[in-house]
Image (cartoon, rainbow over all chains, first blue to last red; front, side, top):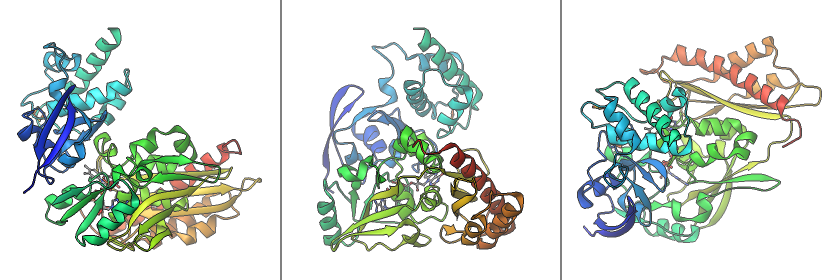
Length: 158
Length: 289
Ligand SMILES: Cc1cc2nc3c(=O)[nH]c(=O)nc-3n(C[C@H](O)[C@H](O)[C@H](O)COP(=O)(O)OP(=O)(O)OC[C@H]3O[C@@H](n4cnc5c(N)ncnc54)[C@H](O)[C@@H]3O)c2cc1C
Ligand code: FES
Ligand code: FES
C-alpha cells in the first residue's frame, strides 16, 4: 500500500512522516512519529483518550485520517510541558491525585487546556461540560474537575 | 482506501463521477465508527474540507449561507448566527462533545440519514435549503426532502451538499430545539423537537413550524400542530392540541433508550416546551435584527 508524505507542525516542531491513507492520525502519531501520549480507548470518538489540538481545536485523533493532518498544527500531551517544566494542569493532576491508571489523563489534559485557552475562569459546570467527551474508568471525575479548577486559578494568578 | 482532498466543487464532482465507490466526508465522526464497525468500506474518501465554499459561514441581507462541511463549533461560536437562530445553534451545540463539535458538520449530520440527527429538526423548521452539486449541475432541495429513510438520501452517488441556505429570520420570529436523552451529555436523542414561531403585531401566531426527531424513520413535521397554532397565543388548550398532534405523528422504535409509549408522551411534552421557548424568543425579537 502506497504511503502518503505528510508535513505537519507537532508541538512546535516541523515533523514529516509517512502513513497509509486509511491510518488514523492517532495511530500515525503513535507508530510513525513515536508520540505515544495520546491513547486509543475506543477508536470511535466516545472516550476522548486520543484528544489532541488540531489547529487549536480539541479533536479526537482517532476520527481523523492521517493525510488530513497535512499542513496542520498539532499539540499533543507531550507538548504541554515547557522545557522540562510541567504545565500547571499536569502539576495539579499529580498533586490532586487526579489519575490512577493514567490512560485517560493525556486526553483530559488536552481537553482541559482547550477549555482554559478559551475560558480562563470556567465554572464547575462549564468544566464538566467541556470534559464530557472524556471518560475515566478509575479515578471518578471530582478529582479531575478540582485539579482543573486549581490549575485555572494558578494560571490566572501568574 | 485512498484519501483525496479536492480544492473545488468541480474537482470533487469529477472525482465522484469517475470512482463509483468514492464517498465524501466532512468531520468523519459518523463515517469512522461505521468503517470500524464494517458497515462501510469506501475505496476513495473525498475530504470536502479543503473546498472554500464548504467551510464558510456568511450572511447577506437575504440569507445565511452555511458551508456543508463547516465544523458545528463555528456555528455555536458565531454570535450573530446564534442570536438569529438560537434553535439551530443549540441543536449544533448538542452534537457529541467539544471534540466532536470541532469536526461534526451539518452536511454530515443530515446526509448520514439518522432520524435522531439533532440539527435536522432545527434546520427544517427554519425552511433550510440544501444546495446539491453534481455532474449535471446544481439543484436546490428543501432539507425536509433530502433524507428518504434511515441512512438514505435523495442524493446520487456523485452528488453532495455544497452549502445550506437559511433565509434571514423576519422580526417577531424565534426558534428553539430541545432533546431528551437519558444522560446530560453524549447520547442519542430519544426525542428531539424543533419549533419556530412568527408573531403578528397583535401577538398572535402568524406562522408556526414544528418538527420531531427520533420518533419515526425520518425527521417529521407536525402539520396538524402547526395549523392549530395559527391565530392563537399558544394558550393551554392549543398546546394540548399541539402535544396530541405531536404524539400522533410518532411511529417510533422500541429500544433500550425508550419504549414506544414513552417516546410518544415525551414528544408531546417537548413539542409544547419548544413552542413556548420559540414564542418567548419571538416576542424579544421585534425588528432590531
Ligand atoms: C461520540 C459521538 C457523539 C455523537 N453525538 C451526536 C449527537 O449528540 N447528535 C447527533 O445528531 N449526532 C451525534 N453524533 C454523530 C455525528 O457526530 C453527527 O451526525 C455529525 O454531524 C456528522 O457530521 P460529520 O461531518 O462528522 O459527518 P461524516 O462522518 O463526515 O459524514 C457522515 C455521512 O454524511 C455523508 N456526507 C457528509 N458530508 C456530506 C455532504 N456535504 N454531502 C453529502 N453527503 C455528505 C458522508 O458520506 C457520510 O455518509 C455523534 C458521533 C460521535 C462519534
Ligand atoms: S480513542 Fe478516540 S475517542 Fe476513544
Ligand atoms: S485514570 Fe484510569 S481511566 Fe482515568
